[in-house]
Length: 257
Image (cartoon, rainbow, N blue to C red; front, top):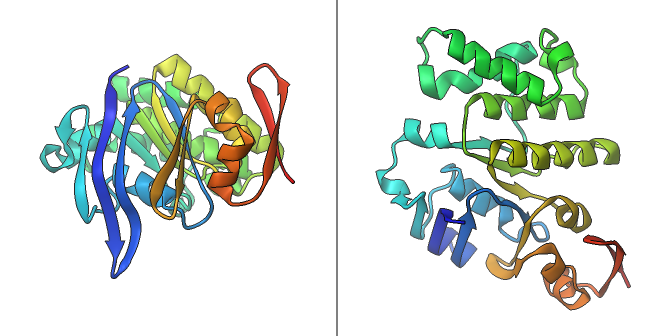
């Protein structure tokens, strides 16, 4: 797999505080990667750098071999979709109206949607199981349904990559599993690159191809779920003694000693 993002010698500083320090990593095309670590480890900041929401203090980041410095805003938005942890208010928009906003990078503020645009909108709504909700106000949806509507907007954007910042943090367990299952399925069906910030290492190991962990703004672990779901590795990430049980092939449960 070729590199979708390449990050070299990346640093982010706010005043004298180093939020990220000397990060060197590649994110490969078609891979679902979880960013792990305790609060303040730098995982959301790394995602925001990849989304061009936070400028780096040092280092370089490239998209498909081209530096961010030479990639235009519209070209970037057509390639990368970003969902922040706290999305903006929807102001009474229906699900379909919200999803249609995903066509903005292709049509601009005054562009008229054609049949192809509506086809992409329809497909995004269908792929996220929102057909029966498309004329409902987003504000009336449950947390899980609302999250699916935002993901559908990114799908309508026809991006090749989804950057998701803690998409399950406000959901109950059932909707957490459903949301990650949806993301994993979409990644396979649409051949998407996905980078998702998660707190639950067990869910990350279940639904992601690769786990990347940060601590104190530094990269401390990077590997497959089988590599990372190890008591010593988890203790180095979270700072507490942890055990791991393999419940089924390639399914692990971690616990604190």
